Image 1 (cartoon, rainbow, N blue to C red):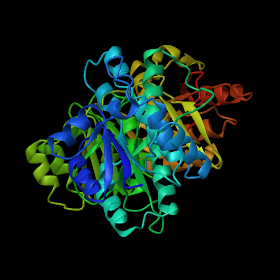
Image 2 (tube, one colour):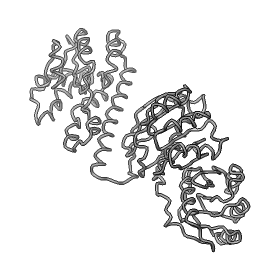
Image 3 (cartoon, one colour):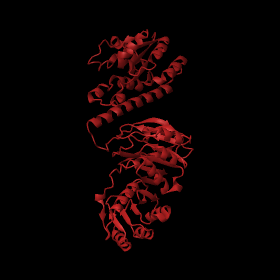
Image 4 (cartoon, rainbow, N blue to C red):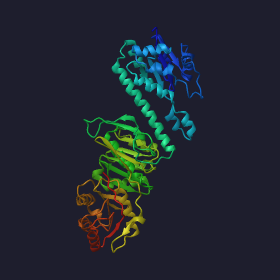
Length: 512
């Protein structure tokens, strides 16, 4: 044949004219549709309108343009004598190159106030069909969906280096492109149809790479951060880093844990995280007071920690933060003066996130070998009305508030979790121990003498009375726990002996 045929139909017209010029110089016959046709024609390049190939006009307001045997036959034909004979019989020219990218469905649905009808009209039909056809027939057809590939494809065409192995790679990219597109549509349509099943038979997870991370859990491990599509609230993947070193995998996990915790509170709140556990958390009249409480909760563990606050960082808070080595700080905003102070430490990572106050139930997932675990997040707030007093002594109103505060923090501590609190300040944490009494010992070791007059929260029930006995020894005045053990009577008796108020919530808060 005298020339090769290429069909070009792109929504994103970046670089298409320059690519088309190169194709013409390499003796490609160009076939195009709609706006792409006009763009190429206006550039003074020879191009054939798709209707002149199909012998059929565009119909249904452009919904049907390329769905035609003269297009799909040309794309899908193998270069065997049998297929070529059928093409000749029906006067169909083979298509050697398909350059297609799709209607901007994602960009459309992300516009404020977009209506369903507008979204529907941005569901591409002909484009995915051509991409899939070309990707299926990759041994004979080149498929290009990414404008960034145009220079590379041009050079390889010039060099005659577009071998079957490379075409297979292009095919894989093309199928990934259409799979991503369909996932956007599926997620959006399920939302509009109000399909609320959180655990469907087929779970679609769509991620878009945001950045490479400095390293994984250890320096020898590579890692990357992806944003997920369909989330109802912004998270760490949407945060904007203003300065500091590149994030690592561990930094990102700790920031995620810190964000989840400060989102629990409407009051000014600050937390410091180490290894996804809070070593300090405080509430205050302002964000500086909250941060100081968080830091003073455990000054040793706070060194090198990850900080999150739920208010703008002001000058006073920045001055306090600058006194100690921190890895990262997440906030809704930093005042210009505060930002200047904190940026005196060039390695300190500073991040902002709009919507830090949004705290909606979501589905969390965790990868395991060969699969993914899904569960609802533990988003139910700790309510005083669920607290049932089981001891002779009634807790005071102050103790009830402190217990609610401590249990809210315990939800975010790795099990077995024990939290000691006083004056809306976490003063001791026991996390991730194999036995509860070990977590209790850890919490009291951190709190030291400050435990006298404090309250204690446990994420799960007590199997033995040893926890209550330890609380009595260290001056705890009130305990909150789920209850439900066959040995509850023993723990209640121990609390009564020590004049400790104890309440059961009936809700366990394991966190793995």
